[in-house]
Length: 223
Image (cartoon, rainbow, N blue to C red; front, side, top):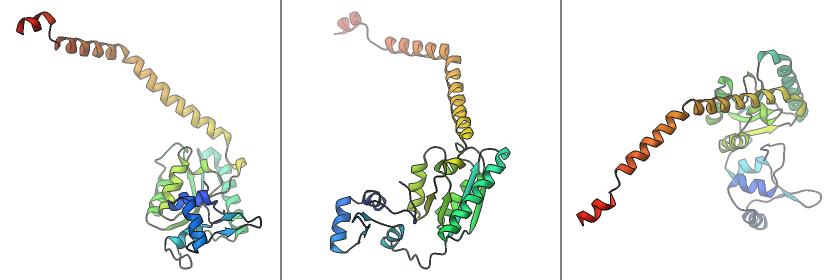
């Protein structure tokens, strides 16, 4: 689900955002509690401003920042990084969005310890960020994007994903996959390394367990 004050919400997505059922939205629409917008083909949709208003947040006096976030894995990809920034600025200008901050980050999308990225999340939690604009989901985080999107939404921060596939280098994806394989290979090697010790520990545990069982002959003699 894309969270964006530019993109409209389908009833199902908006209901999930509010934590209610679609039937509740339909009832609110009929009662006038929360009126749905209508497309020319009479399909219902909602906007992010409606979400903020429903939460009691004054959108007119919202002074939080709009942030462009661009990321590449290595400093050798500086040209790719600048292409992202240029594209996002052009996108924002075309939409009439005023950019308050531009974050240029280096580091793997698998790395959750990126300093600038963590500082951005801190500002989200401090209610300082209104919108984060990225070219593609994996520029923000390689895996687990949906979780982080919902996390930001809880602090009333939207993530606008422009979905420009050309600005999401395939080489980075390959590098990240290789990194994952390397980690699991090391773990498997570690297990093989200690396989004999593990087997020995299991044997000792089994011997101890069997040793604690009463012998049937002794059991009958005691009774």
